[in-house]
Image 1 (cartoon, rainbow, N blue to C red):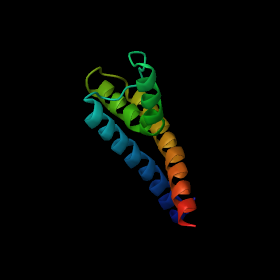
Image 2: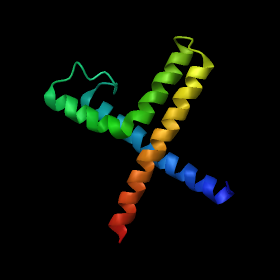
Image 3: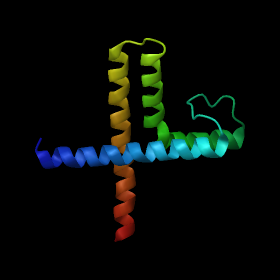
Image 4: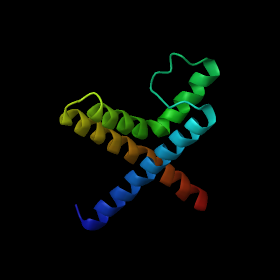
Length: 107
């Protein structure tokens, strides 16, 4: 993998992760609650909005939970590494989607 490819990969992952952090912060600002994968307490509309937000904010939620689990619950480092890998892949996919939408709107 060349350096250019690695830089493009990093840009795409960062785009996805920055979007995830932004959406998480926006959700927390509007609802006064931290976003979670547990949507069972939500009503119908809240569940749909939460699910749509989690599609893009998922990497941030995964990393927040894994770091919290490592520090507070003494989870194993391998668990954090696996969570990080999942978060990177998810950020890459959402970043590719967002950058493709951006490129389509430019043309």
